[in-house]
Amino acid sequence: MKTKNSVIAKRVIAGVLAAVSSAVLFAGCSSGGSQSTAGSTAAGAQSAEKKTFKIALECAYAPYNWTQTDNSNNAVPIQDSGTYCNGYDIQIAKKIADSMGCELQVYKTEWTSIPTAITSGKVDAGICGMTVTAERKKTLLFSDPYYTSSFVALVKKDGKFANAKSLNDLKGAVCTSQQSTAWYDLLSQIPGGSIQPALTDVPTMLVALTSGKCEMLSCDKPTGMAAVKAYSNLKMIEFAEGSGFKVDAEQTHVCAALSLNNTELQGKINTALKNISTADQEKLMQWAVDHQPSA
Image (tube, rainbow, N blue to C red; front, top):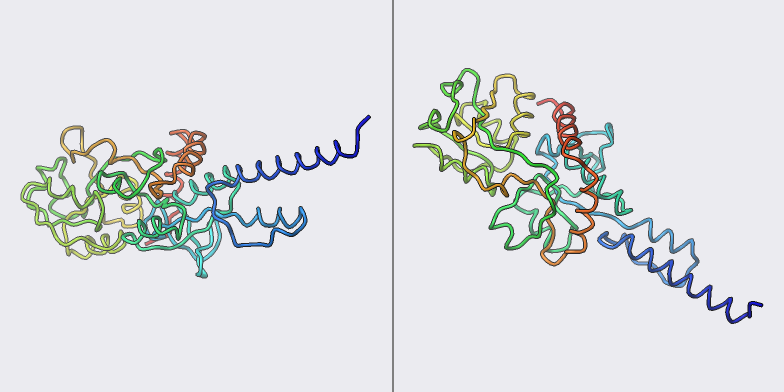
């Protein structure tokens, strides 16, 4: 026969187990706000629903991320804005958020301000097309790669470097790329390259090339793919092995960036990424290239 005390004890244990289960599910997500602990189970569920996964990205770096005016193709609202963000990063971030049981929130952030947004705690992560470098690893923790790319050159179809097949063929090119990126550092490998000041973002880079302010841009392959789709007068140069940019393998890894001590969130992101195959990544990247906004 069950006694009254044993029933009460079992109810208490069940309540504790439920609370622990909820805490494990939402570890790594940000709280949507404080709430009084004196409330019903329904109130607790409402609080759980407010758990969010906050990410920083430019919303201007197609095909990884871009801004659009509506929520078509599963775009996500940009916080404090009437616009939406979509792209490869967004679709990957949504899969991660779903895996953790969190709501995805997007914060539009300038490229150079993303690390600070992460380390200050304003956001949980940067899922922004960022690659791993030795310098970044001093202040940021990185997930497993959610894409692996290669580096290419962008030139004008009717320019003097249109037939280039190697870095040697780009000798003396007036060149530039985005500030605070591995892309810009690669320019020193161009023989006699006339390296111009770094530019703030990809749209500004493309304007510089199409307007004739420079003759060549360095970037990764997805960015090059998006550029030639948006600008019919541009050409992407892919280099044969040994004739292109020399980089560490790590520099080709696109990863989520986190604060250095956030190993718990790193583990949860890596768990989610294990369910996204390389084939799925390539398919999703091609989708992003095909659906980016027109230039």
